[in-house]
Length: 151
Image (cartoon, rainbow, N blue to C red; front, side, top):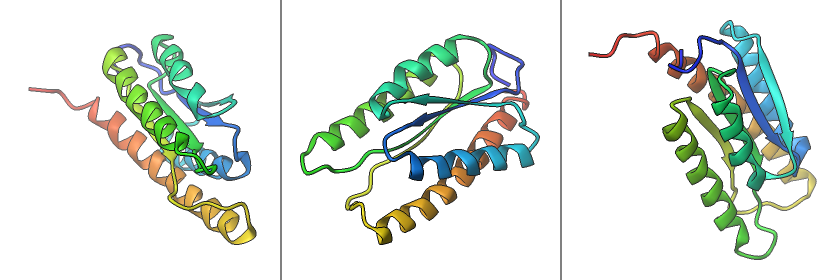
């Protein structure tokens, strides 16, 4: 476990922009974590991806969580701002884990092309389900490393 806590509790932060897609990752992560014995999973909702890092930092510093994960879909709305948002969020999440020594995971995804029509909604809903499963795998594998002595 993380040096800060012996908890097996996991925090999953979920952005509400495109919640119908993001929630697929959240539910798949919860299911995958439960299969691995992590049944205490708190889902914390935030308005969008930009709000994730501060919430992740506060959760990591709380000492209540063995890991913090983030899920969001950052789309190109016709301006280049989405690239900056996605890069800023991922960079900040890395800084949170390095500053707090609590593992932080990202399923903050930025597709090159996203349009709100049935084909893309279906495709990205399935894709986020896969990513949620991968998120659960990464969390469980990383937390298992904390049980192995270093050196």
